[in-house]
Length: 202
Image (cartoon, rainbow, N blue to C red; front, top):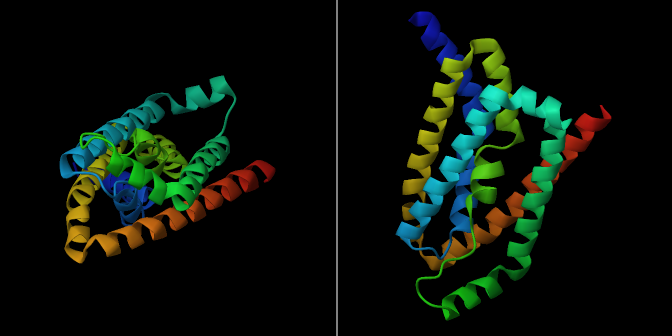
């Protein structure tokens, strides 16, 4: 039992760092700014299901998929980084226009945010995938799977109660956080692309 707990701890901690809840929480708040609480929760559930599906797939078949497709984690870094860069630049340049259009539409319409990029690659991205593959090889499947579930449960708790804190500071501060989050999202995207290219060249 002690060996299993040690393996679970060893698999959990690196994945917790790779998921980086404090870093992606402001991005979630910025991306869902203007959403109602039920819409935000539905989006969160879909994003977590997408992240869990990818994480489990990578845990049990990641190495096989990479070999079959002839790709590497560095390829994922570049591809995911490009997706995030396009989304962040679009929000920085046209976010206010999109929000005005959304406000002009029916009340039951919500901003176009989906499980991608929230669930993939923000919650489970190249770093988390690499961590899962390493943990599986070092600690086996069961501790790694439990560490995935535990980390996603923490994401659910943080993302459920985080936006409520932003509502306390008012809409102006919320919009400012959204813009800053988009800027950091662009920086994260560039860092992912740079790391992927460096890995390919190295």
